[in-house]
Length: 313
Image 1 (cartoon, rainbow, N blue to C red):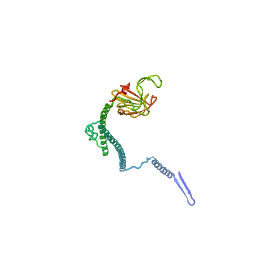
Image 2: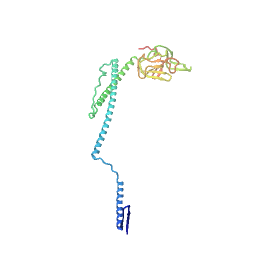
Image 3: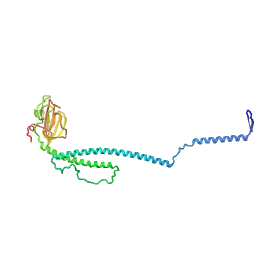
Image 4: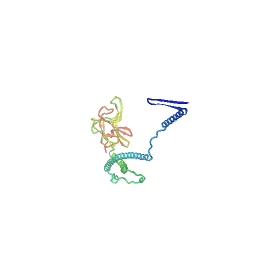
């Protein structure tokens, strides 16, 4: 079996006769070339993409740079935190120093008024003290360490002076109340006695009612005075009394001053005999400007009249 190929051109004409062996060989060669091409194409599609890799030295250098950047960031954060702490400690130190100066001035004045020897209450020196220090503690920021030391010293000084002032206050208060704590006289400077202690006709409903104090009438805004020295135990509104002042004189005795227009003292104040503690008014259950004056012994009202006319010491 043979195959004849004819080619007829414009100026060229030839014919080629192929035997069975020739065209079978050509067909096999074509199939082989096509298989090789297909294999190469499939191999190229299945091969994964490999990104270019860095050398070991380049990776190490990048890690070093990254570590330095993290160290710098951490250092900056620590420095900012330390700076803020130093500022806060500086403000606190200034506050403590001002407090110490005020305590020194107050302590010196109280000691002078109480005639206490200077050596017994010396506010310019710290008391003797001692004790081990933490030798293992090392503060890298020297200024911060110095501030902490000064704050600790000031704190000890303030605590010491507060204890001294508490002793002086107790001593001064005891002397003060002991000398002027004698209960006597009227709770007003100007005015008149308008209602006595005991049963009376109630001014609001007209029925008999117990009146547990004495009323002193006067002009609105007149001074209401303490009838003995003591400590203010109430300075606020109370039902029925209006604006009320209550003073504890010790030994179970208290006085009350009701219906005030204005209060001049507050709870905890130490008041002297004859000191103005309020201004007369008509607050609470009242029909006009006056002071409702009560004396209590062991928290029970008693008749104040004998104390009103009692001669003072």
